[in-house]
Every structure is written in C-alpha cells, then in structure tokens.
Amino acid sequence: MFAWLKRKGSDFVNRRRLGRIHPVDTFIRIDHHVFAVDDMDEHHFRIVDYVGDLIEGQRFEFQFLLPRKDGTQDEFPGHGKVMRIDTLGLTAAFMERQPYFRREIEKFVASHRQAEGNKDHR
Image (tube, rainbow, N blue to C red):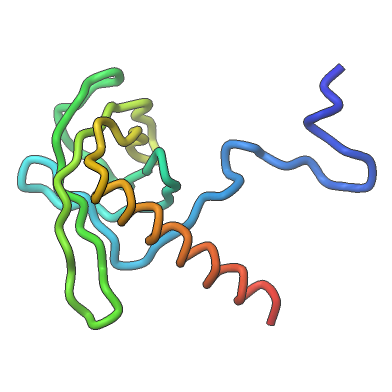
C-alpha cells in the first residue's frame, strides 16, 4: 500500500529530512534575539533553543544572517510562518520571499548540499 515509502533493497527514508542541510554560523534574528539555524532547506528552517512569543500558525518578520566565505555576514529580510514549536525548537516556512532573497537561499542551500556530498564521498 505504501510502497513508495520503502523500496526493495533500501532503508526507510524520512522524506521530511531529505535534502536538508545543517549550516554552521547561520542565524535568524527575531525581535532583536538571535537564534542558531539547526537545519534548513529552500522552504523551511528550524532554530534551536527558541524563547519568545510566537505561536503556531503566526506570521512573523525576521532577518536571515547568512555567512560568506570571506568571513562577513549578509542580512536578508524575510517573512515566515511558524509551523511548529516543540522541545527541539521552532520550525518555520519561508513566506513571501523577494526574488533576490529566494535566489540567495537556493544558492546557499545548493552549495552546502554539494559540500556535504563531497564529505560523504571521501
């Protein structure tokens, strides 16, 4: 019935975790509080140790602090929607992304996927 969940000769794959990256030195600023990004993809992100007033389903504004190779940090304004808050942190979806911001997120995620893929093949 759910053959698409498990193929012969392969292990179960959690489709929600497939394609996520675990960036280092990447942060989200919400209401003057800065939180580390635990994992993310092109559409969602999870921050750890969230303490704040947001509730599930709420839309919010944030600043995405994206590290660059030269050691600097770029800030991108963003809008998100809280998907879940639990003991692991806050999970949110990117909303209403500007085209430049969307491309920067996609490039950032793609470069981390490539770097993580290179680590696995060593």
